[in-house]
Image (cartoon, rainbow, N blue to C red; front, top):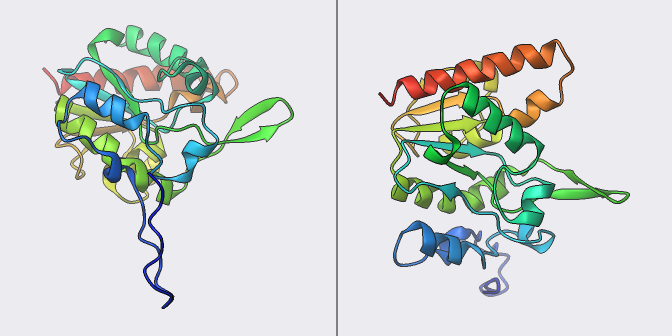
Length: 219
C-alpha cells in the first residue's frame, strides 16, 4: 500500500500513517503475523530485512515487550534470538519462568540501524515510529490478554504508557497504563550487556529479581 497523496495544495499535512492501515479483520496471532509482514506504516521497513513479529503462547499470562529487533533478529525473523535474547532466556530460567510459557515481542517490529563499516548498529526508534507501530502491540495484547505486561526498557514503556517515562521512576513497579491492566517495568537485557563487571553482575541479579516479582502478580 502506497502513501495517500496530500489533499489539495493548501499546505495541509499528509495524514500520519501507521500499522492500523494493515490490520486484518480477524484478530488472531497468525492473521496478525501475516498482515504485519507487509506493513509499511512507517519508513523503518525500507532498510529492514523483514518484519519481526512477536512469538509465544496465545494464552500466555506474561507478555514481555522490548524495544525493537536487533541485527540477528532482523536476519532470522524471530524476536530475542541475539545476545540480549540469550541473556533474557538465562534470566527467565533463573527466575523460574519457562521461556515457552511467555509471549515475547517488541514495541517496534522493524530493525532501525545505521551502517558502521560492515556492521549494522542499532538506532533508537523515534516517538513517531513507536506510535506508528503501536497498533500491532495493541492487537497482540488484545489477543493474548496477559495478566502482566513486562516492559523491557524505556522504549517499551513509552509504547505502553503512550508518553515518555523515566526508567528510574518506574523500574520494579506496577502501573496501569492504557495497554494493559497490570504493567511492570524493568530494564532491557541489552543494557546489562553494555556494562562491565561487577556492575553487570549486580544489574543481572536485579533483573532476575524484577522478573520474579512480575510473576508474583500472576499467582
